[in-house]
Image (cartoon, rainbow, N blue to C red; front, top):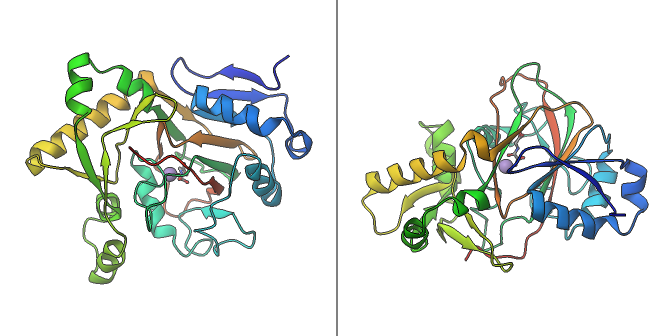
Length: 281
Ligand code: OGA
Ligand code: MN
């Protein structure tokens, strides 16, 4: 019998993992490897109503790899970052409005870190309206290209920046905000990410600013068109949150975004990220 009980949520992306509780997550040593395999297959794993407490979430994430501590300091438990628009619960909440646009976590790191292998969110409080999280399979988006497109797009390189993703939600920044965004280096990535496994995914989303060597407007139009194709409904799973749910996604082959929710919403997710070891190449 397989270690996990898994039901696919859509044809393209997402699976629900049932018959698992916080106790088993803490004690079953076979689970880490099984969950990483399932994540590679499904892109997103949903654990309905798990009710993990923050310490247990961090301990569980350690089974998946090394924990990312670069956003520590906003929550009393190391390894936990509160995702909320409420600045009294997270002083850096203003940045999180950018989660409303499709993106991949870790495309504009402080140095040259790889994107985080996995991001884990647990719902502590949900929005009364909106706030579903959507996921799109970017391996499937690549598979969908014609051979000619695979060749043409496979040669493109794209510059990503924090400024590009922040400008979409804050088009008129103060000079201090702009200086803070620009303190983060820009990163040039191939549009098509060839993984060690041989699979190929697309590196697209809010941080993608312009296509190297292409007229700016033409490049932007292409990025917009490719994002639209990559996130069309057949490639998307939308998660409607219930308090206690935990969801994990694979930043290697999944784009994600938060559905809009009000700035004064009580919505609160606790996030832990697991470091990646695959450069975008
Ligand atoms: C994130 C993120 C989406 C959400 O935490 O990286 O994009 O629905 N969150 O809150
Ligand atoms: Mn994100």
